[in-house]
Image (cartoon, rainbow, N blue to C red; front, top):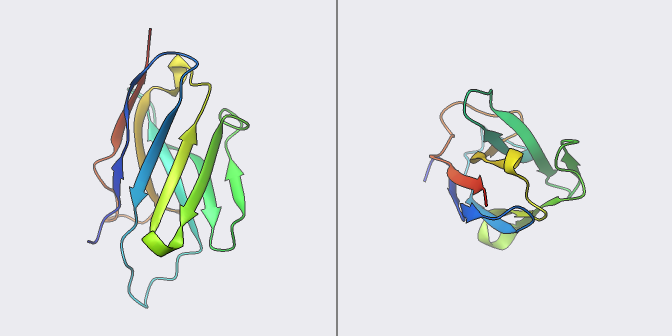
Length: 117
């Protein structure tokens, strides 16, 4: 596996919750990523970083998702998660994971999240 693989998206009502999963690729010794992140791209908008986590467990969040989203990792499974609570219609987007800063060639297909009543 050379790309990230995202899953867990779906249709949810405003105020609902979803948990996204991301299978991270095994990297060669030439790549030593320190941060991994969740990104999203809404229709007609640029892709944006919404949350990231370091190898040491430090986290950063975009203001728009702070206190609603939680990023975490399971190193044994080489998997990253994004717990999304109190979802809003403006959270509707395709969600991707990658390193932070992102690396071309590692983008997956993403997972669609739609928040609508």
